[in-house]
Image 1 (cartoon, rainbow, N blue to C red):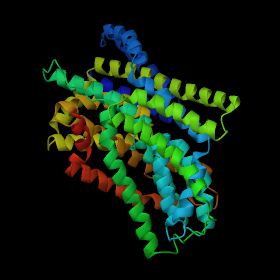
Image 2 (tube, helix red, strand yellow; image 1 turned 90 degrees about the vertical axis):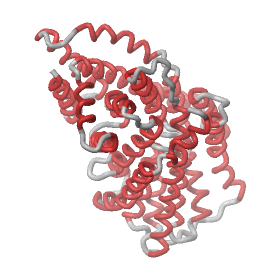
Image 3 (tube, rainbow, N blue to C red; image 1 turned 180 degrees about the vertical axis):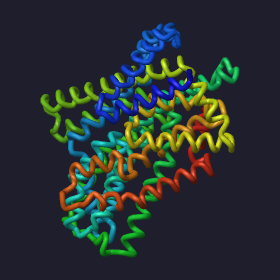
Image 4 (cartoon, rainbow, N blue to C red; image 1 turned 135 degrees about the vertical axis):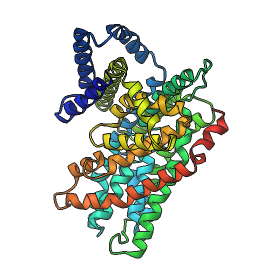
Length: 453
């Protein structure tokens, strides 16, 4: 009955394209197939007895406690207008050279990625703040929009992002399943902190590559990215914009890398730090705090509801031997492990056009993760490659989510085709980085190995 598992997957994709809510679609389609299979005698209803335990396990998962804390940090920093002060400070430093304003956007995007980790909010915020300034300064629409879109998606890879928190939790479970399948009954563990460390060097390389591209392009074609005469600001104003988010980033990542705190504990440090920054900037009234808490509750509830729906879907999918079907397909591919990894990456890349990273993380990774890890793939390397792959998918025309976010706030004078053309060089950079990580996995695994994972 493996073909039923394929029908389930196609039914979910069809329902999502029709506009039905993700979490309810995942659970609803699974329950319909489970009920129909039970009536026809082709599905064992005892599989559904595991649903309460799975829901309870999700609610008691200590790692997932970091989700509302990371979301709260991002929402509070967004309301405290950190991006605006960062952009002003960076523009005063680099704006006087060709491409300097684009370089400022890249640096601010990287700092926001490490501070907030919310991709959609970062792209929209940078689009509202920097796109009008860049266009007035004479930047080509392609250079301006491409830089903003690419910089806004850095939160997909740069820790401590919510993407890595969710992916790390799923990858940890998949790693343990793979080891148990291989007869290892005292399995090693891989943590969210390991994934943070593994993504650190690739994230820095990606930012450096973005900066190199915009500065080299501007030096050759100053007409595309001319110098920008920003009004000078004082040293105190510059430090006031740069220092708080940098200290927050150092506190969160430093506590994890130093072994002082777990990712969940570090997330609480980040949330408290964001509240202190907003308080010191006098932007934390009771009204703002209530709005931040309500927004955090809504986003967190959405994440957990999707996780519960995905858990039910994967349970029914396994009940129809879908996991065995996927395993056989990957094992039968010519070329062994390399071809299997490439096939999974292509699948996730295409799904990134219609699904958000949360659905892909909770639906696809639990199915393919244990299979690839049982074939000998390093879990941290695989997690970082998946995050970078999804980031590339979210940038790729015509369906990339980041393109839609920017299109929603860009002026009508900026053509959609300009946005599409603008992101092409950055997509090439990310594909090149993926090839580099595939050739040299040590760029991902070195830092986690120093901590002894």
